[in-house]
Amino acid sequence: MTATTATPTTGYSDPGFGTIVEHISQRQAIRDTLTMARRGLLRMKHTPQQLFDVVVVPIVFTVMFANIFGGAIAGSVDNYLPQLVPGVLVSVAITSSVVTGVQLREDMDRGVFDRFISLPIARIAPLAGSLLADVLRYLIAAVMSIGVGLIMGYRPHSILGTIAGVLLTIFSAFAISWIFALMGVLMSKASAVQGVSMLILMPLTFTSNIFVPPTTMPSWVRSIAKVNPISHLVSSLRSLANEGQVTSHVAWTLLGAIVIIAVFAPITVRAYLRRA
Image (cartoon, rainbow, N blue to C red; front, top):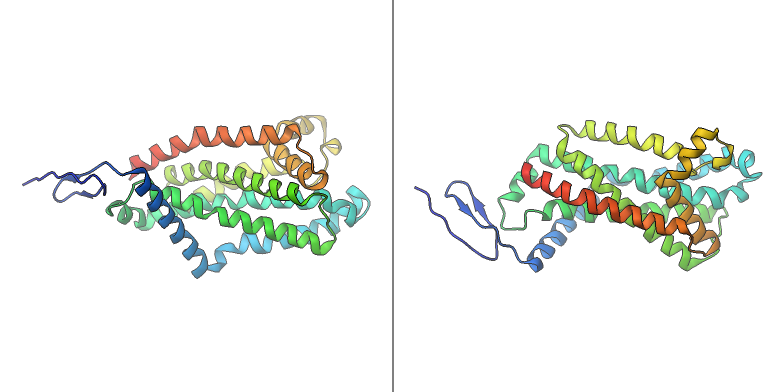
C-alpha cells in the first residue's frame, strides 16, 4: 500500500511509504546549510590533522623557498618576501580547495550523504554546508602564510589592501572548490579526485608567477603565465598588499571567480542531486 503526504516545511522522503515532499523554504534551506557547515567545522575540531596542509605547508614553503630562491631571484630573502608570501598564500589556498572534493567523495562512499537525504532538511544543504565550512581552511592558510612572512621580515604596504587581497583569495578558492566538488560527485574514488586535481593544479601553479617572474621563462611558458588565472590572482594580491592599489588583475580575478561559480555550481548541484 502506498500513501502520499505533503508537508510544506520539511521536504522529507520515505521510500517505504512513498512520501515525497519537495517544498523547503529558503530560510529553512539556509538554516540547514549553516547546520551542515557547523558539522564540517566540528569535524575539523575533532580531527585537526585535516588542517595539516594549511598549517604546516605555509611554514615549509615560505621558509624553504625564501632561503633557496631569494638570493637568486631577488638578490636577498628580504627582497623576495613581497613576491613569495602572496604567492605561497594563493598556492596553499587553491591547493587546499581540493580537500572539498576528496571529503565529499569519502562521505558519499561511507553513506553519510544517504543518511542526510533521509532527514527533513534541504537536499542541497550537505553539499553547500561542506563547501562553506572549507572557507575556514582558506582563512587559516592566509593567516599562516602572512604570519610566517611577518616573522621572516615581510611588511605589507597596506593593511586594508592585505585584508582585501585575503578576501579575494578566499573567494577565488571557494569558487574553485566547486570544480573539485563536481569531481567528487562524478568520480568513484577519493584517491582519483585527489590525483586528477593535483594533475590539474601542478601545471597551473608552476606556469604562473607564484615563485618566479614570468620574464625568466621561455616565451611559450611566459605566454601561458600571462593568461593563467592563478597569475592574475597572485598579481592582484601583490598589488593590494604591497602597493595598496587596485589593478586590472583584481577585476579579471573577480570576473573569473564569478564565472566559475555561475557555471560549475549549477552543474555540481544537479549532478549531486541526481546521485542523491
